[in-house]
Amino acid sequence: MRTNSLTALLAAVLSISAILAVRAQPPAPTPTAASLPLPLWPTGKMPGKGAKEGAVEHAMTSRGDNVTRLTDITEPSLTVFKAPGTSKPTPAVIISPGGAYGLLCFDKEGTEIAAWLNSIGITGIVLKYRVPNNMDGAFQDIQRAIRLVRQNAGDWAIDPNRVGVIGFSAGGHLSARLSTNYDKSTYASIDAADTQPLRPDFTILLYPAYLSQGGVALTKEMRVNAKTPPTFLAHTEDDKSFVPGSKLYHAALEAAQVPNEFFFRETGGHGFALRSKAEINQWPQKCKEWLIRQRIL
Image (tube, helix red, strand yellow):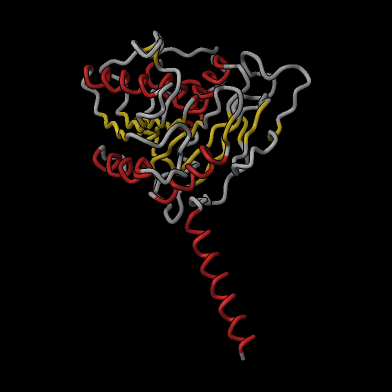
């Protein structure tokens, strides 16, 4: 009996430990079934350059943090995660993962974000843009991406007037760049998709990088004006390298009287996405509330 009691006690302790371990882990959202990746460019028509000759797209060696990092991307694409449970046209958001323009954190800042968007009734579209060291190619990719989304809105049950962008770190820079430079295409027209508008209907920026020059002024490419899309920003004070850019971008939005919200907290660091235990982890709910106020949801 004593052996049985000890066995039962041990089983209970292990069960409780397992529960606590699960609770201690950040959620790992699962998006809806994805479409097959859609190439951004027709064969032989991609402007600019790809990865260096001979490089093959691959996942980088794990850093032990449960993040899939892709690099050497020469064939950019879109993967569509349709909002579940409805046949009506939904808003859509093009998701640009971060990675310092050297790689893409494809699950943490890509597919997991698509799952969150699905949970609030938005179709998430993960953009695999060209890396490494190819900012101009990446910008051509996001310009092509928003045009393709609008071109395919009917087939994908998307409202073409509610197409936004969300970006993380370098992907935040890319999304902000599109949001302030939508007046001119950076590549020659290829097909009918390239007649579609480049301006996002709304923008969501999470700890965007590279927005400022030395933390004292926005870079020249960040051309914020009254026509800049409504914007939601989230950043933390302890992201010392990049938070000055978000503050300056927010101030420029305010000066231009662009509807915006800046969700700001003291701690959380850089790269929190949906995995933070700090107070910044409230950003998804704050963003959802903002989207409702903007009548996007």
